[in-house]
Image (cartoon, rainbow, N blue to C red; front, side, top):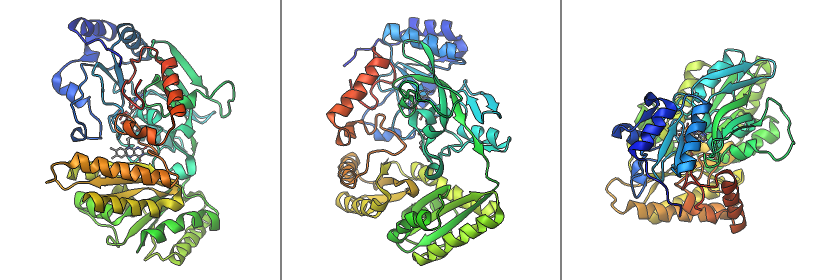
Length: 472
Ligand SMILES: Cc1cc2nc3c(=O)[nH]c(=O)nc-3n(C[C@H](O)[C@H](O)[C@H](O)COP(=O)(O)OP(=O)(O)OC[C@H]3O[C@@H](n4cnc5c(N)ncnc54)[C@H](O)[C@@H]3O)c2cc1C
């Protein structure tokens, strides 16, 4: 294990010289709040705490701090908005937390090349809004988009609600400015749609969870904004009926919805407790949200009628057409608040992020029920069903003392079942600190050694976000 240097008063003074005193903080409350993400403190078996916070205002600041930390072997953990669900922004070895709150400018909207260039601390929803003002769309749409930063989205290769049609964050990143742990600044990619010049280093950085380099500028693809959007809310008696619909929509109506989301009965029950509102057929076994978009009203209404017919053929209890703002907002508010409802209403839980081939979702959910029976847990299942990505939330009764044991037992059983079904450990929330111990169940020794080798090439002194994804 690498020995790291502590952050002394002298280090703090040096950082203040590099960034200005107003961009450096050691106040204990601030240190605590910038040392956690949305995994929740109770999940960890110890407290992780930054020793100093830095708030760079420019690429030059990032470069100066990294070069300094590298020369002194001080760990640096990059941090976006801290909405991560894998402990990625938690400073596992203390040291410096580098927070991007003050690198929050949109630098350029290029209407000739349909791109937007931003600093890493811009909130995802601000990127969406800026594109919309020009009749364009940034299609990255994680449910945390009102808070998460674009740098965090890139580092996690965030998914969200539109992946089925437009791909994950990575599919929409054209170029990145990256500062390596040595302090060297480089660009990967460019404002171009094709590039096979050398290896694809843009997509090595995307999803690398801040262990290879620090992203300081992001160039994203924009697409024309579709003028008409319709959401169908479709309750089914059983999960099986709901899931069987997914490939039929694409095969038989011959379209890819812009969203295809799933919520089980427990999801609706918990989110309605949190929001104090209910969706129709609240007690149904499963609800799907199917979003269609286009520019031609007639074409769109023909499409949603065909999808609606197919829903009824598949046993839908009703098909609600949300073609007005209020109902659409209610549906999406419900869907987007499930994760938050769990965080607020429970203290003992694990939020999982499993992916299986879509046809295997019912089998996965059967394994979830078995694990819950075995360990006396309750599950809330929802997610991006069009991508086979189910957020399985294992909830423990508040009175349970040995809850970590129950959770770990259930996680292991579920991971084994997921592997059997041809699935994997995380679809969009990442490995970070939370899932690291289980990575070996899904990647073999050769693959793990390749990851370690790449880490050593980028970060020979192992200062950048140590303790994440793999141990070295
Ligand atoms: C209610 C809720 C809903 C969510 N919904 C979704 C969803 O639909 N889809 C989805 O994919 N995720 C979702 N998430 C998870 C989370 O929001 C995403 O992973 C998001 O992309 C994290 O962004 P952040 O700015 O909060 O990053 P943080 O949590 O601060 O950091 C995440 C990782 O990125 C690294 N990082 C941050 N900035 C940089 C940088 N500039 N350079 C290099 N590394 C960096 C950090 O070191 C860390 O490893 C949800 C979370 C919550 C709480």
